[in-house]
Length: 112
Image (cartoon, rainbow, N blue to C red; front, top):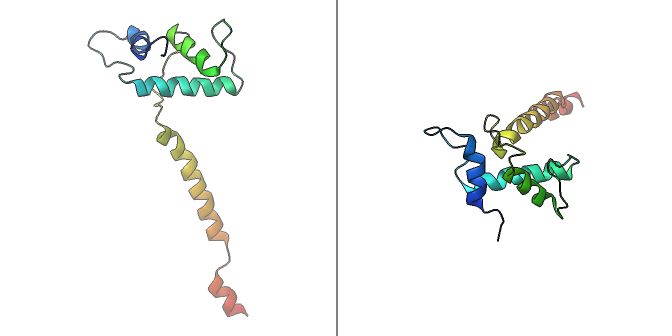
């Protein structure tokens, strides 16, 4: 069992939302994405924002979220596809440039 529960985490994250406004998170999936992203940051060398001896980066991330040490930023959009799009476009442009600079097979045959 997860302590704190998903519902408790959602209540903490949405605690700063005024009544009538759209909640920051409204599903467990959002909580999972946020804590997984923070755990990856911790693995990559970020310093924990809470004190304590936690065995795993995910435990630290959950504790940070439950104590409001971190916030979920909805402005940047945590859609993995949105983050992958610029990389995919850059790769496509690089490949297109290589294709433009590549010698044409037909013109090589004509030169021979």
